[in-house]
Image (cartoon, rainbow, N blue to C red; front, side, top):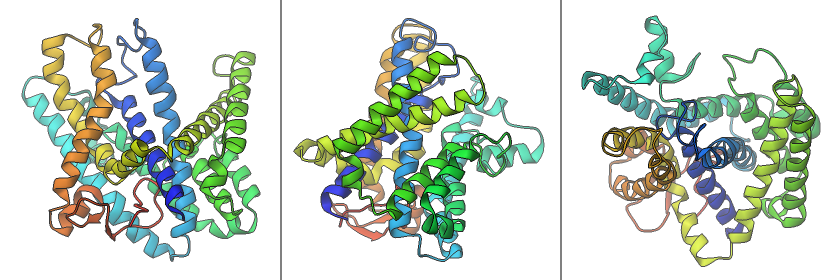
Length: 371
């Protein structure tokens, strides 16, 4: 992989993870607020419902592409072991931190919706912590759970992808139309776009080829127009058209995100932003905790989510979380290796550059491609 291709991937990762945070800004897009039903709804739709949700599958595509180019040759047990240490362990650490913070919030007289939604019995708490067979209390980490499951499935069906990449993509698309994919997959779109990324790598389509305007812009606008047309022809939740609309919308906007990264790759400032990529997973793991801590004083001083100042809070939180993660990541660089793995799944030297000591292979969300 060339340095320009590496920079493109890092830019996509920083863009996607920053956008994904907008979905989880307290109290969440599922709650009526100034950006959800109020005067600032356009901001909620653009940053959260569009860029935020589409970034999930865009990042899944990049993860599938990188896994196929760097980790697919590893035996299944080795892949599972790497996922356990590079993704699952830090996810469990930060999930436990979130649950503890939510419990302490309740003890302070501020009941947490996350705790209130925990299922009954010990299994409810297991799911709230791990996402094993139900949603995690920290819903932002539920994406990580499905990303792990999709990676393991992709490794199992690697012979099919290698033999018939187009057929494997068609099968992956078909999975979205099944009525029951749980508890193996709660969001089959993640698997679909991972297999799509792997199939592109198998066909020999490089990142540069996929991001070039003649490809990304044509397919990006094409899928977006097709999704918009389908939405107006079949409004509402008319099965299976809403699923087809969702997949085309994700594919179209995802292509445009990749095109933006391609256009920025020669910009010196953008190359500096690409260096933030190695801190992006820490930002994603910690952002719900950071936003939760900041939301309490903000809501008491500035008012509830229904008030106009909430728009500023909503817009500022993801960039702020990324900035804090960059600062914290440089401090984590100095910690012992085991603590680094526990907090972010990777080990870096204590230096100003992104030197890799132990980089788990195959994850577009995690892999650091720079030396």
